Image (cartoon, rainbow, N blue to C red; front, top):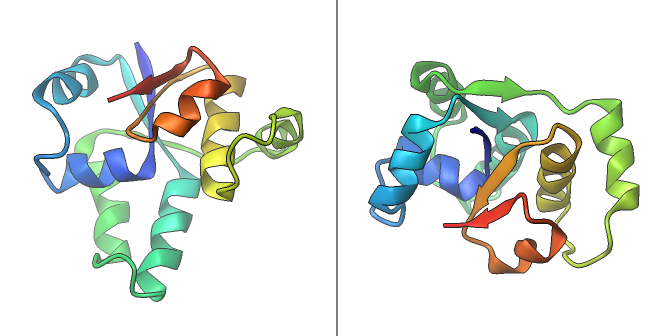
Length: 125
C-alpha cells in the first residue's frame, strides 16, 4: 500500500504521539511507500512562524529523511487538479494534499473526517 500522510499524522508519527493509534502506526510501518508532501513542510513552516506549532522546521525536514518516508513534490498537475475538487473544505493545504492523493493515486491518512467526502482513497485514522 502506498500512503500519503496528512500533516498532523506526520507530526504525530515523528513525535511518537499517542493520538496516532497502534493500528495506524502498523499501517504506516507496513506500507510499501509512505509519502510526505512538500505542502506538509510548507504548512508546518507557516504554523511555526505564526507560533501555532512548536517545532523546528529543520528537524521536521530531517525527520522525513530519517523515517525513510519519501518526499512528494507539488507538481503542476497537482496544482491544476485542485480546480477539479468540489469545494468541500477551505483549507488550501488540505486541498493540495487531497489533490496529490487523487492524482498519484495514494491512500491519504488523516484524522479530519470532513475530508472523507472527497474520495474512497481518504482514510480516517
